[in-house]
Image (cartoon, rainbow, N blue to C red):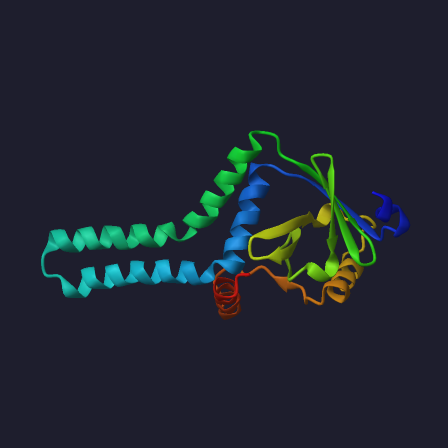
Length: 193
């Protein structure tokens, strides 16, 4: 891209997507932005279990409610799985090799031989886990950047650079639903635009 040549590239990274990366990204997205729905499903499951344990006298009814309560709780991860499955089907085995070039104010993302220009100020969430950084543009659009592919290998500088350019403080991806994730999820639900 012409603009890319005018700006100096400060950091680069790349990822070869796979079924695993699609599932991982969908899980992170659901953990960060789908917390309200997840808590609601878990609450419904526990309500069914409580009804089975305390409200019904009949054993068959109790067993049915217990079964459906446990089944409902196990479905709390279903939206993330469905999103990942849809993306995997759409890729049809042709998973993208994505290259990220971070310039002063812009991220250039190349996948499927097409380059997209993203203003770093458009990033609304900056998260990380042990292996990746996640840059969310909104509740349903994100970039997954592997830590092991960062060049130059200066993760602390990279995080400081992104925090300064995006205005977002890097947060760890929670391993369970947190109050902050509930607020973020509720905000995404009620402020779609």
